[in-house]
Image (cartoon, rainbow, N blue to C red):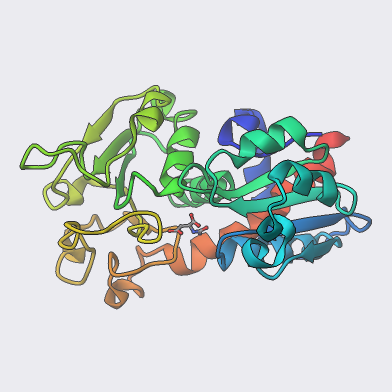
Length: 310
Ligand code: NCD
């Protein structure tokens, strides 16, 4: 039994195996039936489009079944005061694995302690989103296979954007050996010497074993960036006063981006990337990243529930 609650639950070797398997699935999109006697419970107590649909479609692709709650935050017994511990105890009587999203950043610890079947973290508050990190890494490696000397920039809500936290943790497995440079915007301190409300929390910086460059201006460095990872402001998690004139990628500055760079975004997108650059060949967010989410989740479910236990 193996959970995937945090990026560190998988070794680099396992990650490479999952990424390779995802590539094979894409090349041969032909249904496999490895999970035909298995069932997952998708328990989403926060909104989702891509993560949830791709997990459910992935399970169907593997020949398995899905049980679910329309909106676990309002329709499950959590609303009657049931604990997450009791929720895990219940779901494990019906399913072979649980895919969960919940706004409590610490729910994975409860799962690790009490769940007796594999639990996959599909988003833990403003903490982590490890399956998104896998699909982001997969996308980055497809677009820049060697990763050598890559300059990767994260821009947007680095405080509450959980996809950034998990991808940084995953990149640390590659960064020193590949000489990857990571840039973050906004920096911890803004130009008025005030701490910035969107910057990366210390605890995520501390897990990185490589140097991080903090910036408050994107335009000067834009022509050097290979992978530009943009995120939305998590309006539902924090007050947005004072962050109105934040950097936006649009047709006025897209010309500064390297011709062979890639623009990634976990989606949903708000105003930080203008729709008028969606058809730019460098924009990887709508098709490649979204589709990779499906292949990666097929490969992960297969790894956790079938291949990995052989
Ligand atoms: C992200 C999430 O839920 O953290 N979306 C996703 O799963 N693709 C990003 C976000 O909500 O901003």
